[in-house]
Length: 168
Image 1 (spheres, helix red, strand yellow):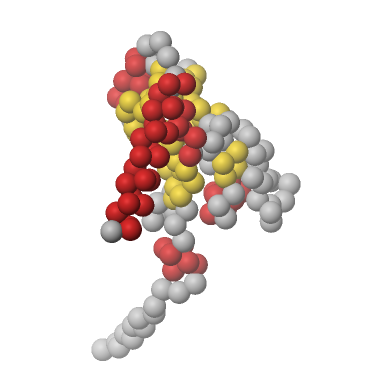
Image 2 (cartoon, one colour):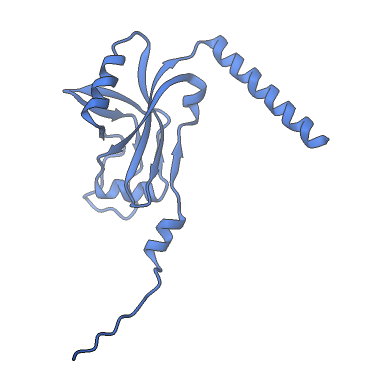
């Protein structure tokens, strides 16, 4: 009879570091400049050096928007810095990236996009526990100047209320 010995090892190193480090890159301008109508979560097609740069937190989604081309959803304006240890295989920082959604969701978005004043913006980018990059996108309508002023008034009023609560 053969004896088998099993060794239980703790997860250390890279696996544990990825679980602790949460990457969440947010578009802070989006809530100020746009009124979000509906949100979606989409996967994104990346190269190896791009995902490494995102893990380092070197991405910017502030100017990013989405558009349809041949029935596929593409993201433009998303800046992912070049990987510092990348060689000649490094990616171009401002290239267009394909987003992955179900066909049903794509058809719904394409129909709603035909309405006047509707656009698709990127709200945030994050990494899942499995290490996949995901993008939160939204169908949005641009705010007018008075809408922005109302939001600023509401924010100031809420801030004043919070300060008053802390005093008493």
